[in-house]
Image (cartoon, rainbow, N blue to C red; front, side):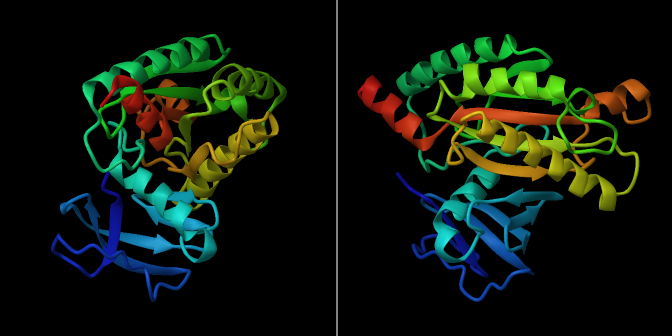
Length: 267
């Protein structure tokens, strides 16, 4: 399978090396993103930080940072971010670099159906099936921030912990071959300077509690805050703003899960 390749200041395909040399944190850099044999996602501007990167108004914290010893895993998280975006702009999808066969897709779909059914039993969780960047079935679980947190706070309340405990126990811990992305969102009340870090802190609070419930740190591929940049409802109404204040947890097939399904399907 072909891997995602990140190159600096390169505008053509067919070059196999990956370069991130010369990037210092924090700094901004323009990258051309290629997948597999020269499919070009186009030029993007990234802002690198010690913990990860900022893209499309979202701050993403990656394990070990984007550079240095943890660079490989971090670039994998960046790959997952870039390759898959659902209709609301959130990144989902393992970097596999090749089309996944129909048989493997059916096997993965059945596993996702079971995960979705388990998530639907979690109080205060809104659950829906979506497609990831590989065209595979995935699951999006949305928690209303008003249920999880007090106004302008990022500390989980007791009811939130009860729901997240069940979510961790009944969903994530029994589906360890599914990757997870967590994204916090706000309404448009207040400024980006307030909303962006608040949404990120809330996503990080959910991540921390899920890990305290036994979820593996390696299963959570990326955690970020989108602020008010990805509304799902009308911010001009109180009901709409409530819907926009949320934390989304995405479950999607990991590379290992895809490879196992392909072996099972004989592909």
